[in-house]
Image 1 (tube, rainbow, N blue to C red):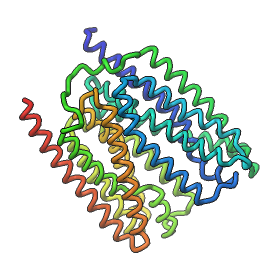
Image 2 (image 1 turned 180 degrees about the vertical axis):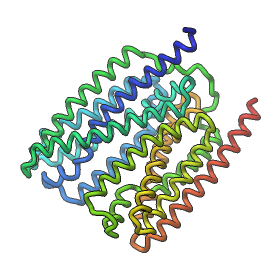
Image 3 (image 1 turned 90 degrees about the vertical axis):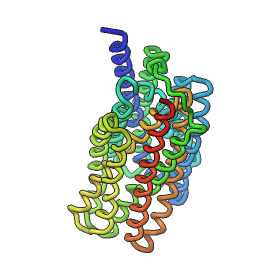
Image 4 (image 1 turned 120 degrees about the vertical axis):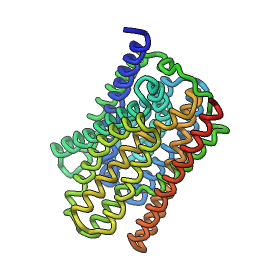
Amino acid sequence: MNDKASLAKRAFLFLLLLGFISLLSDFTHEGARSIYGQYLGLIGVSAFLVSFTAGLGEFIGQALRVVTGILADKTRKYWFMLIAGYAINLLAIPALAFVDAEIWQVAIVLILIERVGKAIRAPAKSALTSFTAPHLGAGKAFAIQEALDQLGAFLGPLFVFAILSANDDGTVRGYQLAFGYLGIFAILTLVILYVAKVRYPHPDEFETRTIVRGFKGNPAFVLYMVAIGFIAMGFVDYPVIAFHLDEIGAFNVLYVPLLYSLAMGVDAVSALFFGHLFDKIGVKSLVIAVAIAMFSVPLVFLTGNAVAIVAGIVFWGIGMGAQESILKSVVATIVSKEKRATSYGIFSAVFGFTWFAGSAIVGALYALSPVYIVMFTVAMEALGILSLFLFQHKQKLLAKTSG
């Protein structure tokens, strides 16, 4: 086996190990997040504080990534950021097993700390994944990560459901047991993470190609962030879809979580497909995915027909999967590895802020008419597609001048 083939094999095995870590971590924290609301209600937290905590946690989890991304690039201590982030992110969860109604404030702090941990590790993790891109393709690398993420996110809540079903006494005890059992997977994640660090101490060496552009003074990166903003702003959150389905009574409320499971399954398959397509045709694959996802909102919010709504949710899942596999892949192709974590931090902040802004606008428009939601989201996605074409044009110009 020649050196190039050997390096490619090592990169692939490293990516699988990183993906397995993602699976276990998502199993742990998504399992916990699936019961945060009910748990907080049982220990006496008000509905306002539950909502406020969720919103603040997501804001912290996205905004802090700008800082942690810069730190990862400045120090080059990607493993330190990853291990510290995972430890904070995951060990906050079993700590919830010791919280009851008398110290409910501690539960809120721990939930926020869990989000801080994710913010610490996320840019470093994306950077490590991107280092395997020259051997596997950026699309495939992030697609594999997303598929394993989603498997963990699917299995974790099922595990928690099983724990609660076996300990359903109407008290907080079942929830405390669930958090405690999830701690086993948290510790397992950290053990495997340490093994990965020992086995692959310098994963940045997988990437030997040279991209000279950082994100400063990079017009392509700026245009891409504009496109990201429009795409995120026009993408409707599933809770809004679930709320609408309940309002119109198109499905029994018991089936709404099953529809979400369907969307997550489509998400995983879509990530793999569009990740592969990205490596073949580049940004055009993202344009195709956004165009398909654009039809989800009219089908869900305007038809009232069960079959059309299911089709809309399938399109929504396609959009989710393509976003997760392609959006980060593009950054790996336009920014040098020395500034990669910083760029992922900026990417997350832009995506998180515009997603939040779009969600707020959609919520306000729903009170007027679902028609306005369709008009707004379609317009945003169309602007996103236009920005992607401009980005692609700018990329071609930069390639000519550098060539």
